[in-house]
Image (cartoon, rainbow, N blue to C red):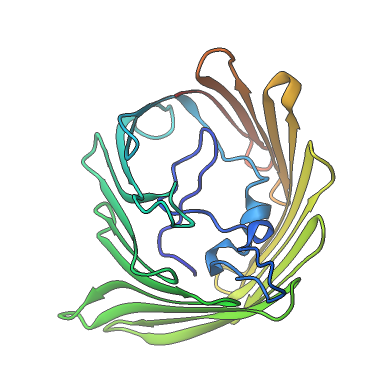
Length: 315
């Protein structure tokens, strides 16, 4: 389950409230001890970042840095599938110059034209302890998380949607341990309680990293999720994902790749999955203008559907 709310960040993608933890960029230690494994939510991050994010309609994003601490963005989205909307986004950055995440947001607020509000906060209580809080008005979601990062392990506890009157709550516990410089083992325990039901799901996780590849596996009662990321060279990265769910009785297999062309200021991401969906997104940096042109298309051969999108990211 991980976080109740999950966001991603890439050029032209939705901004992320917290720093992304990728296995290839763990906290390096030069004293011979094991590295910190990062967050549980970041186990499959390097593979997921290779896949393109679906884009539809026409979108324009305008980013503006007001000061060294404040950043704002305006998003205009015209869609033929969903209602067109406007979204205002503001970030307040970390002020601690000694923090490892000094360039990450500490407070985030986002509201759209329908009145839906998202609020996120990240506080560094100490060098090793940080707390997160998330609120989403559209689904009336509350989420609180406390994470402790040791020298070679990470432990976190998340509480979502606590309701004393209805006696309902969702609790999630994460633990990751670096067994060696390449191997990470851990698990996730999800406990949910409501008036109608109560239960828990245990998921075990493992990750093994090579010089230019990362293999990750999550397996439990709810299903399995396996991914493999490989960086062929400076320009080409590939990723493979396998997901099986015991609840929906569905199994999917996906292949994605990313190709960077620095000379042309372009990045292309493509994907193909077992549901007969083929798609790709091209990002072109329009130098010397501070803008990025985004073009994407996705074809669902089984459903006979075509989805095309065009976007501009300014700033």
